[in-house]
Amino acid sequence: MVDPVLSFVISVAVLVGLLMIRQQVHVAIMASTLAFGALTLGWGMADSTVRGILTYSTLKLFIAFFSALFLSYMMKVAGILDRMTRLFASLSCNFASIFVPSLVGLIPMPGGALVSAMMLKEHYLERQSLDRDFASFLNYWFRHIWVPVWPLFQALILTAVILEAPVVRIIESTFPAALGTILAGLLIAYPLLRRRARRCEEKVSNRWKLLISGWPFFLVVVLVFGVRLPVEWALLVTAIATALYTRPSKGETVEGIKFALSPKILLVIVAVMMYRQYVFDSRSADALLRFMISRGIPIMPVVFTLPFVIGATTAGEFVFAGTAFPLLVNVLGTGKSINDLALLVGYTGGYIGVMLSPVHLCLILTLEHYGGRYSGVYRYLLPASVMAVLISLALGEILWG
Picture (tube, rainbow, N blue to C red):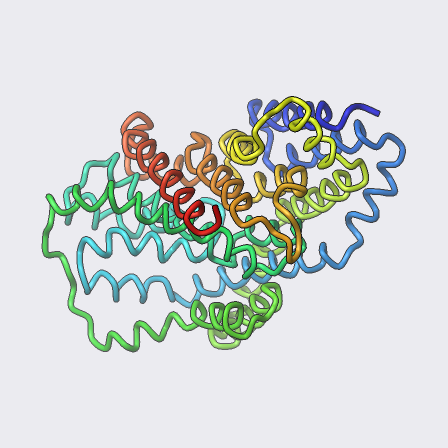
């Protein structure tokens, strides 16, 4: 058997190497997982694989992912986002510039920033005459502000499963990251938007009706945070209710199910649960902790850096959670013993790493659609990221330090 810490380094190298040769993310994750299992467990990997897949946690993860994706598709079919966009554009031009991408961000989907980019192209470039790089930043940044707190996001769902805690408990630790991201984005965006203040609001009738049309969002919030229903069942109930309300055609229903049963997503779920079991059976988390302590390495910088590097190189919210957190579980804690500050540090590291990744699909699609430049958008993205980290960790230190 190979030392667990060395095995992890090799598995990450496999992951990054495959991505660099443009292999698809789900294939790279599975290959990396199998490499880690083979190195740490040898022939015992087979038994560990079966026990990792055939668990209730895997079933819950599947239900949550399926429900979130199917709900997203049904809301798209129902035109809920379009109606909500009209409402907020009618209130304030600058408010719409920030809020519309954040509204679209409530429906996680691969490359989802392209949806808001298409909705706002005329608004940004013609009505407000924004620079293409700045418009790209606005759309990309505010599209992702809910990643630390909205229970539909895969990273939160995975973190909850790995740490054996309800999603609401995870959000109690990660919410400062959302506050930090929002404040940092506003500090960068508001002064520049204010210089270009224009009246571009459109009159709409019956704003209350438009607001009520977003009821699936409110239902998820009530079921998860009010009723405290487990997130997988809250999402499933909301998805079914939305489908019944929308009354999609047979073709739309089939397409929604196909979208939700993406083989790529299924493979990621299986790989993450296998990896989690490999880490447990090989005692890799213990080995990593002993490695850090024996060499006098400060724990918190490692908790931040490990997810950050994985997030920046893979550009996947679910990847940093599924890869780094099983190894850090002894530091992060589980169940009722979660270390709030450590979890915030790790989640912020992975989240900001993903936001800074040049291979993030949302960033690539936004730049292509607006004709922006990497050099231009990073002029806003880098200072916003630094401020987001500082604000988030400062809030965490105040709350739990």
